[in-house]
Amino acid sequence: MNRTIELSTREQIVHMLKTKEPLTAKDITNELQITEMAVRRHLATLERDGYLETSMIRQTMGRPTAVYRLSELAEGFFPKTYHTLTLDLLGELVQESGEDIIKTLFDRRKSKLQSKYEASMEGLSLSEKVLQLTKLQNENGYMAEYEERENGDYVIQEHNCPISQIASEYKHACNCELDLFKSILQVDVDRTECLATGGTKCSYVISNPSPRIQP
Image 1 (cartoon, rainbow, N blue to C red):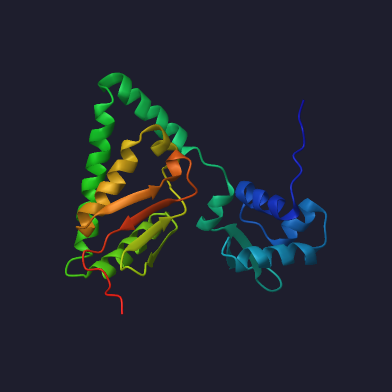
Image 2 (cartoon, rainbow, N blue to C red; image 1 turned 30 degrees about the horizontal axis):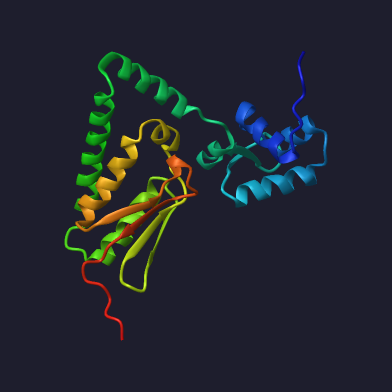
């Protein structure tokens, strides 16, 4: 039995654009049977938030008409199962070659990231390296932020892990990230919380070998 999934007007518009784009406001109005004003209000909100791309098409008569497409940012509306495929492939590798092959793969990934990160940190102080590391992690989707403690130590907190499902299965991924931080910062780093083991974030305490002198 087919069941109709109840969607909000905004969700219906996004779904239509995903399956039938490009569309005009009139196309959407005719499909949803609601007022064009309501449709344009939703389109304006989606465009403001960066989920739409707009272009103009010329018509044989009258003014050009705006047509709408979903932007790359809008892909976040739709479910992805990349981690499922990755886990399946890694599972096949383990069956074929054993658990050590997974460690080798993550070690190679760490080495590549280390070379990339170190190149952007040459000549920087520890505080500048921590800032740069936070920026790089953000570019990779970790939603990272950092703070400096009163004793001069730093804390990097990552509120998202793009490979959390994989890291939950293969803990060596987390070990490699910790080793990466230690290698590029060249100081002691301690992970105090981890998303892959049930934490609300990944938290790293970075020891400053030259602590702040208290007045």
